[in-house]
Amino acid sequence: MLKISKITPLPKSTLKVVFENGDIKICNISQFIEKGAFRELKDESLFKRLKNTGFSVEWPNEIDLSSDTLYAIGK
Image (tube, rainbow, N blue to C red; front, side, top):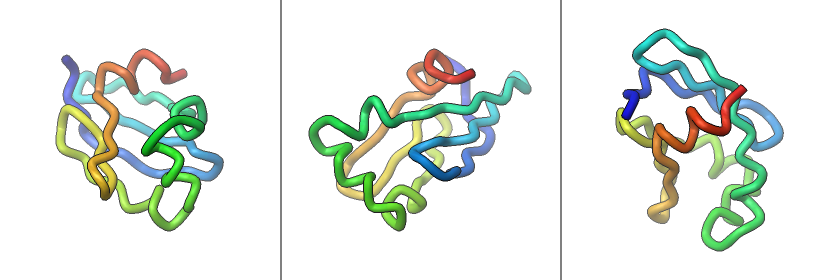
């Protein structure tokens, strides 16, 4: 599992993720925002309140995505 060095929220449900190996991925998470608790992230102000835990990105209300998932969907 790769550790996340830095995460930056971008417009349109997108994250810029820098991993410890130096890879930079642009991750569009809109596929998740249409489901369950992730729907709350349609609120741009909540989406921007992310926290980097090292091995995941977390938002309030226990919403999270693992670094593996972000790496896999990133381009």
